Image (spheres, rainbow, N blue to C red):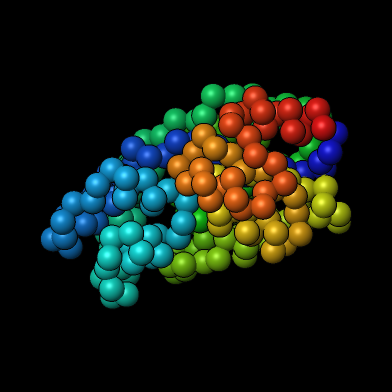
Length: 217
């Protein structure tokens, strides 16, 4: 096996969280009395920090974007966080990693309190050695910082034996910054062209291909 640890992004990598995320983004825009966003724009909210997304994709100024994040979180916390589905093969892959003694981590741009609630709700928290998100006070934490925190908790000495898996450029660039290997997945919400040209060590189309990267080098 190539790896002693595998770290996953959550949205668009472990789970399709679009239904809940889109509903909360729409709530935030409606509350601010802004025009609704198209489906293509909504899809871009999966993965990047929310403050960045509201500024870049919804065209809000800094003050409006901060308000939008607050409204989004109110809506998300009320129940939209559980409106998701795990990608086919992900629970089985996590169980397989654990069975083979490969440490597992989760590095998300979601607030940590939401990540912990989701994992406990779906009873998969025991499948991760470490799961980390951002604090509620951080509107735009760099993904690199979250990955660093997970690496520290996992205690892996050789970072080249760690694989970071994600569906956006933020995940691949974060992996490069901390010195781990990376796998870009094309089944999530990230732009395929960005992933294909990201310099990721591996590109996978589905969870089965990811399994092969890890267990059949």
